[in-house]
Image 1 (cartoon, rainbow, N blue to C red):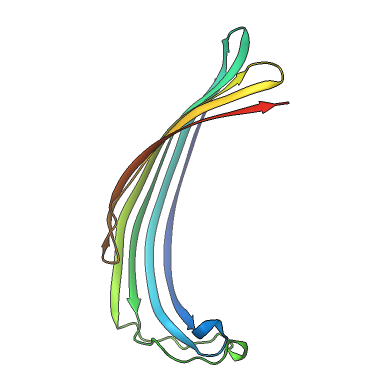
Image 2 (cartoon, rainbow, N blue to C red):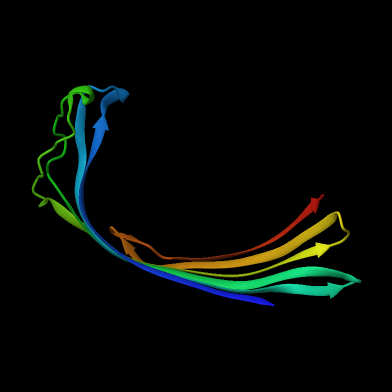
Length: 171
């Protein structure tokens, strides 16, 4: 029996400002700033996968089985500040260098603070029905849930789904 455990984690810290542009009628003239945002984000990501696999005998033939569980979590903590510098006319895109002076980010702010957790359990079997024909069957059950808020909207859900599958390989 083969066994494996994989884990990973990451911490991301971002500070960046972005200008979103609005183009009138899809043309390169008439470009204006649509939203200018300063984002500070601290996101943490965690992941784990534990599985076992190995052969088993049934009906005089050797088959393979894999069973496992996965878990992942994201913790998001964001703060955005917005500028009043909305609707500023810009030169035609073909003439614009892309430079834009950094505005004051003092119009209003918004936040996001939420967690997302995903848990899965899975099993799959490779049935060696003959030397040429293999049947693959399995099932995956996943549950995902979130708690918190994202820019004034509740970021809350809890859902699960079980998905069976079957396939064949003929060589």
